[in-house]
Length: 295
Image 1 (cartoon, rainbow, N blue to C red):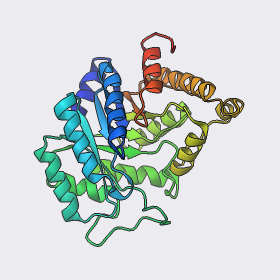
Image 2: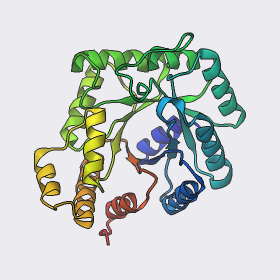
Image 3: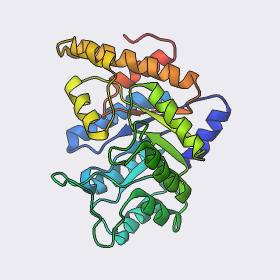
Image 4: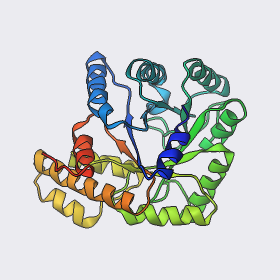
């Protein structure tokens, strides 16, 4: 099933899309924990789940195995991330062939981050320089539903917000069906970004990416890497906890609930949760959106 069809159908019926992102675990224990998380989130009937590709394509085999297992054994619709890092066109073509043979219909093409220790991204000989080239390559050969990444607070490598939107427009025109944003904590950043995108002629659905905060040092590290910011008032509340895990999670979940309620009330077509392979915070948010209070 192509995810875009479900997103459009649900939106027309007044139903938001909910989806979850996972990453390939490093060992059997992590894999067991991941599938326990998937089992806990499954009853919320996600539109789809996505599986990341790992730094430098390091989890390529695991990503393929996970999306196949999720589709075959769990029955959820999976989307495989695919990056340009460290791979030639032929190698990426083989990955796409494996996905096609496994009846995986959905792919998220990304440029990917530079390898650890490298200051900038450089394509390998015979590889792709950026996500738009990868999208063009896939579109010319396959009929996958393609998602695209976008940055409400501007891609950290973009020259300006205007240049970022122009790059995004080229990627969408190359064949992207819907967009998923990087995590953000101020909804105005999302809605201003959507306005800029629509003004540039980008008409596809833009799903809001949300990560409930459960660990302060961790979220500071993530935001520094992706160019997102934690609003001052929220950061003050989190730092005032003195690092108390339960209190940080309570504040983080409360903020995520308020974000999601406002996003959906103002017309966002769906929420994509960055779960970090754990279900508790996401379940709290989903229960609150149904009208129940987090326990």
